[in-house]
Image 1 (cartoon, helix red, strand yellow):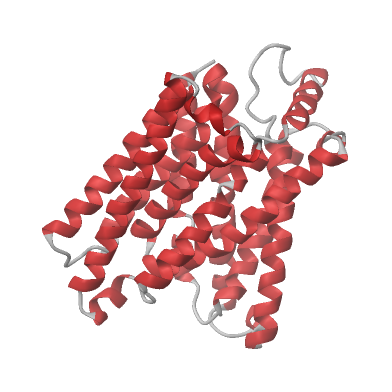
Image 2 (cartoon, rainbow, N blue to C red):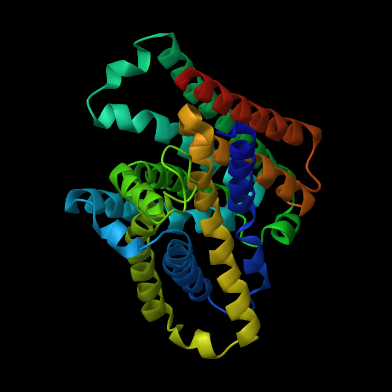
Length: 350
C-alpha cells in the first residue's frame, strides 16, 4: 500500500479529465463529429488495447476468461456511458470547461453513489447507519454545490453581452448546456459501474501477472484493471461511433478526414484528445491497488480533482472574465461545496 502515491495518481486522472478537450481547440476546418471520431478510435479502442498489450501478460486470454454475463455487463454499462460521453462533449461545447465539468462531474459523482443501491433493491441501505447517512449527506451536498455552480452560470449569462460570452465559449448556451449536463452526468456515472463490475477480470489479470513473475503474490499491482477498461470502452465506442456515422451522413462530412483545414495537424490534435481522455480512467484503476481498503474512493477523488482543475482552467482561459463578484463568489462556493461533499462521501463510505 502507498496511499499518498495512490491519491496523486487519482489527481493525475482528474487533471486528464479536466484537460482532454483542450487539444480540440487546435483542430481547424473539421466538423465536430469528425474530430470526435478520431478521439473515439484512439481513446476508446487503440490506447486501451495498447496499454493492455504492454502491461498485462496474455491480455486477450485474460479478458475473455470472464463469464459472458460479466463481459456483457461491462459492455452494457460502457454503452450507457457512451451516451453520456457524447453529451459530455456537447456540455463543454455549450457551457465551457469550468462550468460544464463542474456540473457534469458533480452529477456524475452523485448518481454513482445513489443509483447502485436503488437498482439492487437496497435503498434502505442509504440510511441504515451513521456512515450511510454521511454518504447521503455528501450526495445532497454535491447537489447543492451543483446549484451554486449552475446559478453562477445563469448570472454569467445575464451579465455578459453576447459577444463577450462567445469569446471564451463560442457556442455558449446556458439552457441547452444544463439539459445536456443532466443527461451527461446521469449516464456518465455508468463508466464507474462498468469499471467496478469486472472484478473477476482483474483477478485473472493479477493471477497472470503472478504466473509471469511480474508481481509477487499478495503485493499490489496497478495494472490489473486495464482489461476491464478495454472491455467497458467497447460499449462506449459502439454508441459513439454510430452517432458519428449518422452525423456524417446527415452533414455530408465524410470527406473531412482528407480535406478541409490542416489535415496532419488535425489528425494529431484530435488523436491527442483520445490519448489524454483515457488516462483519467487508467489512473483511476492504476491507483486503486495502492489504496488497499480505501480503493473505493477512486472515482470520487478523480471527479473532485477534475472539478478543481477544470475550474482553474476555466478561469485561466477567460471563461469567467468580465463577470461580477456575485457570480465568481457563487462559482467559488459551489466548487468548494462539491469538493467538501466528495470528502464527506469518502469518509462516510469508509
